[in-house]
Image 1 (tube, rainbow, N blue to C red):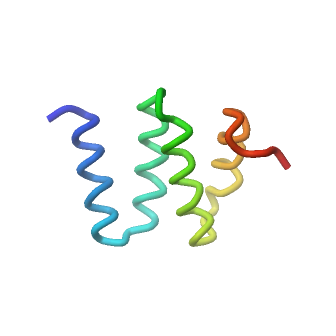
Image 2 (cartoon, helix red, strand yellow; image 1 turned 60 degrees about the vertical axis):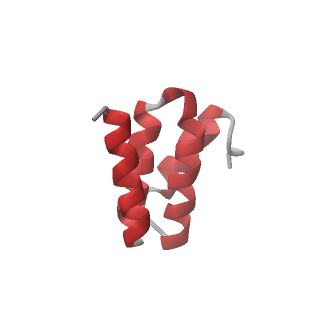
Length: 73
């Protein structure tokens, strides 16, 4: 099983379990490893972080802004 396939399986499992904390971590991990889809994965991590008021919100927003995918404050 490739690393991407394993990560996809973990993402699907976290979605199935409704595990928001795991989703934030896994989408952030995906953004760090799948460079051509970095903004996509970071956006998902950011949305889940916003939904639960996670401490990762500022860092994720900053990463999105650096990519030009989120307006800077």
